[in-house]
Length: 95
Image 1 (cartoon, rainbow, N blue to C red):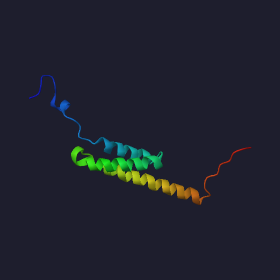
Image 2 (spheres, rainbow, N blue to C red; image 1 turned 30 degrees about the vertical axis):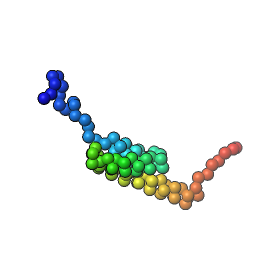
Image 3 (cartoon, rainbow, N blue to C red; image 1 turned 90 degrees about the horizontal axis):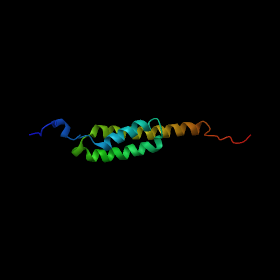
Image 4 (cartoon, helix red, strand yellow; image 1 turned 180 degrees about the vertical axis):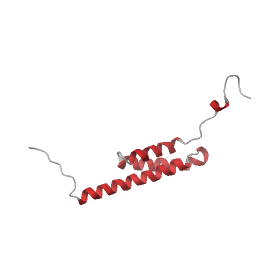
């Protein structure tokens, strides 16, 4: 029985894993900004989210976060190799 004035949908909790969502967000943002920092964060959060997936759900989002974190690190390595092969970075200071 439900109490007066409450709906059964309002009392149920969300079964989506918060770490899986955080992993997916870090993976997506890591492809564009701060990939050397957000890539490993997405991988770690996704791995922990996968371990919690049987109880909380969100295994697909956790797997996607891990994959996007790995892609962010690969993208960083490719950009680093391209910049090194083209002469690297040069800093010009002075007049």
